Image (cartoon, rainbow, N blue to C red; front, top):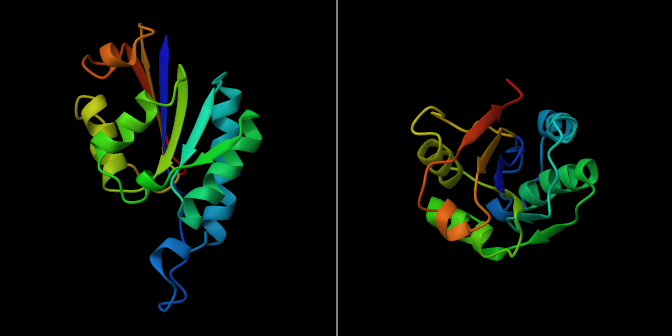
Length: 156
């Protein structure tokens, strides 16, 4: 069974307009939400083989909360920063794992979640978690058919 968890980074801090987008940290709400959503994913019984994260600070910080809750280290992936949906799915498919968490950004996360849910997930708010499961062990098959099931969780 292939499982893909999409996690949009938690709420970031816009307090320093001179700060490069890549270096924006989480704000107070983001620092609160990330461990809560990570714990809920772990409590659901989800197990990750690998966590892939954008190199942006806000994504890496979010991924760290999920890594701690799931007991799985996070791997930084430059191609996930600002990536479109097809790049997010390709990164998961080529990770060499059956159960993958991808922590990244919008609009790619929303587009991918919306596509995989058949339009039922209309948006991925910050720190939202969408989990998709396929009844196959082949990522090529999973990438070409609808998931057998999916769930959605968000802090709001």
